[in-house]
Structures are given as structure tokens and as C-alpha cells.
Image 1 (cartoon, rainbow, N blue to C red):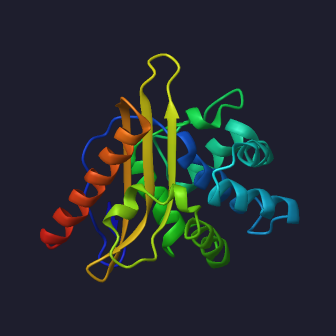
Image 2: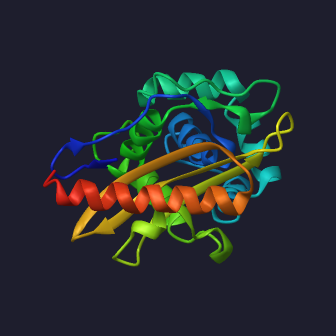
Length: 213
């Protein structure tokens, strides 16, 4: 997590996780980067479905539009995501990443120190602020301001039946805007994964604030 205003940050763990649907923020950021922030009407419609409702068909359409894994990897090099590898063969949800890289992606979306222009950042942030009600969980558990902007990902692994549950976004706490990314794997159910991510996000934000960072 990070406080962009002060430049302070904190992290725990450096393991790699599959993204599931949080990669959809990355895909849209890559598309905006490639097109200088100018999207077609169809792309805008797909982007809204992809971020607000986590629509997978829309995600596949835009993943293909950025050039698949090759295009996403190229954009991520520009974004400074050094430990993120795009999923191949169209499996964008199997993109591998770290919590630190997702924190960097949030900086790309929410701070001026970004290769994206202000209009592109505002567009992404707006979509992340109006996710469907049934997907408003995760890092939002730590929010006090009521204007959280987030994207969640959840995926049951075929090999184990266990769940990947991830959440990234910006929350308001103690009058500060904080960027938070929580990645998890191995939960017995989606509900257990959500509870885990929410407890970690809440504890991390409280600790970060109490530590005076």
C-alpha cells in the first residue's frame, strides 16, 4: 500500500499470484496508453462492461485489441511493472503479478507520475468508482470516505478447487487517499477469500495510519 501524497509505502510478501480479473485495469490502461487516451465507441462500451461488471467477453475483446500478451507486456514495461507476465493463449486471467506491481499499477492510474494522461487516468478512476454493487468488496472494507475506487478478481483453480481472490484500489482513511493491493490464493471458497482479503486490507490500513507513515 502507499500514500501518494507523502510518498510513503509499506508491503508484506513478494510472492507471485495470478491476477484473475484485476488484470482488467491493466488491460484498459494498456489500451489507453496505446491509443493516446482515444477509444472508439465500441471500446468504451466494452471498457465499461469490463470494469464495472467484470464482463469476461469484453475483457477478451480489449485484451485482443492491445495485442494480447505481447501488447500487455510491452505496456507493463512502460508502466514499471517489473514482475508481471501476461497470460498467454488468450488466458488473460492467468497473468502473473505481485502486490508490489499492482501498487505500481495503482500509481499509474491515480497519480500524476504516470505515462497516462490526466484524461485517461480520470476515465479509469471513474469506472473503478462505479463497480456493480455485488462486486463492492475487498479493499473497500478499509474505506471511510465512501468514494472507494476498486477492481476485484476471483478465480477457482481447476487443479485444486481452491480460490484466488484479489482486490486493488484507492480508499479514503483518516482523510488520506491510500492505494491498496491485496492478493491471495488457496482459500477454500470465494466467500472465505473475500473475508481474508477484507481483513488484511482493513488491518493493513489501520496499521499504516497508526504507524504515522
